[in-house]
Length: 210
Image (cartoon, rainbow, N blue to C red; front, side, top):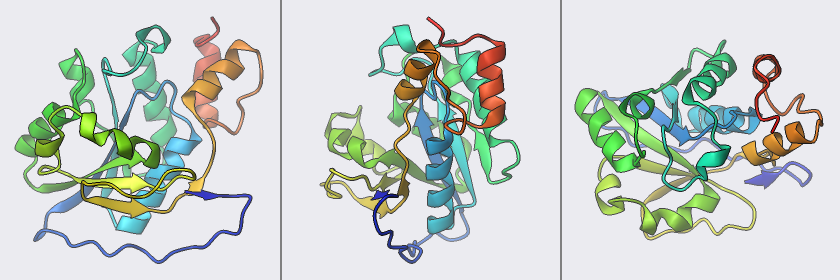
């Protein structure tokens, strides 16, 4: 990624080889606890640079690597995603993992999605910091046969992997859900870190206060 405080070099759009007339669909998975403007920036930049038809935000039910005590109810996370993506027709929500329940493994999800939607060509978006963990992902060698991985470049992480990765430059905005939850607990402002509608929802439902 590019730190916004430094000189920014805008690179040309990445040329992608598509398969026939299949739709190009981005998948941005996560707990979204809560969704924030960093998520939206990544999704829009990847969509634009790779010429994707749509980007689906895919919240997980029970993520395998997240401390459950910090994850609020799925219905609230889903509600905030829907509020955040309203107004962008290229954004949508993918509910497969929420509806299935249980621990969410990307391989199982993508097997289901590719079976249901053979007309789609999937691009699975991950942060540059997550690329080094790919060897530990459940059935990763099978997963890379189902999707094209898109790595979002990030300072401090080498854009390299033994797996095929499409690397994308995105302006680096240092926002995290952990930061937002911490600020709320300390009664600090999160305005401009999340969409206004999400901020209103958090306040109305008194989320993350404990």
